[in-house]
Image (cartoon, rainbow, N blue to C red; front, top):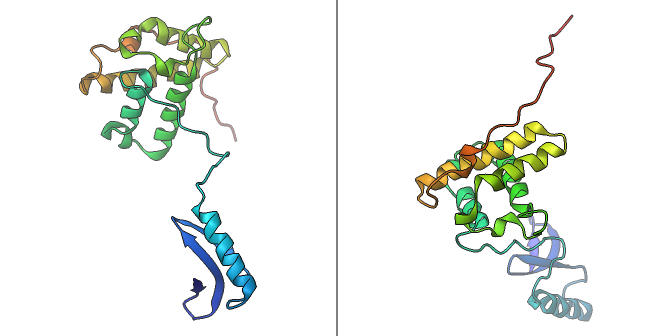
Length: 180
């Protein structure tokens, strides 16, 4: 296939299949072109194996990871502005990647919803506070509480385990005053 611009000039020759394309640099009508064309068709017939993109974690129905996936697809989450979605999603995903306990390295994303307790939420909050980030610890609690609030309305959960976890208190320098 020859791609041409709006003015009719030739831009290049490409073989396209399934949304992928390979450029053929040989002159059309030559034996080299036919050979390159056949090689391009064979290459496009092979499945794409990408090492750059990690595979998505397997989501088991009824787990915290499943609940997060449902929340990300909900109208409540999608009604947030783009930056808020990115921030909230990264905070929740970091919580889901945490281990159940110090002894159990299985990520919290695999925890069944009936076993999500305020003790687990408190542990996630405290892990971030131990890093010296009490504001980030409070964000974990706040965003998880919001997700659990949505889950109660959507009838995926009966109670909000983050409701019983208190915010981490910390001292700040307040707001800086501007000077000329």
